[in-house]
Length: 345
Ligand code: 13P
Ligand code: SF4
Image (cartoon, rainbow, N blue to C red; front, side, top):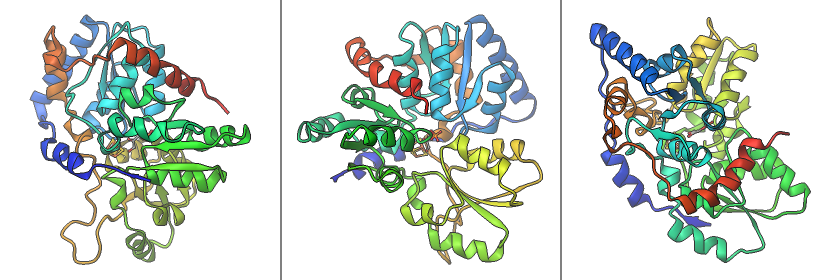
């Protein structure tokens, strides 16, 4: 395995500042202005489940979408708007731009990155691929445009198992990047021959299996929901493992009244909407005696707010927060991305 660059990830984390939270009349005025600006610019808001509930609510109220990363990509590609406003992290904006080069794609802030993207620089990933020319290169959507351009397939967690299973049945050996936990989970599910890049999500890597087991003693009727970016020990004790959408579905369908949730806490907003009456508890990220039981919130997702969303929509130049992808790179990345959005099992 090749190791991710932790120093680079830490540098980005230090720069991540949570968006300003608006309240009361100020918030309402901001919502109204964004509504009008979206209309005036023929723009649509595409938000991830981890963003602030205010952002998710506005996306739904204005005919946009709130979803997992695969649905975000499909929605943006198929929508007729001239402009996509992507509330999430940078790879989501880049994916939208690559799939719709003719649309303007803006984000509340381009500083919102992802440790899986930062930890897989093309300067190291390219040579890694070159060393293994016999392997099909499958990369997670949480990567840069340049890494996608080097891939045969792009996947998200909602199709990773099915896609690798499909490739394995065709006799292909896989090189998988950039999340080692997702990669090992997929390998365990499919038995495929896989070589892994050593990257991890700074949020999910913190979940602790022992802490969850301790919590289950207090809530014996609880089911555990885990995103596959979590460590193997956490996945091993989960009742449902899947993408954010698949976890929300599990919360709705499983009979348990209580859920211990090993993913970003932003998802609680939609889980509570979809499964009212059920109780959701954040999986612990720390052991006994720690000051914080769970800090599971992505520092980069937290950078999206109503205030900076309004600011980019107000300005004709989007304050420099518009996604631009080199056309040649975009053309190469489009093929594996189109394979992703078109893949159905
Ligand atoms: P989903 O594809 O499940 O929405 O996950 C994206 C992500 O970044 C999880 O941390
Ligand atoms: Fe990346 Fe993890 Fe944040 Fe998801 S939660 S965007 S994988 S850092």
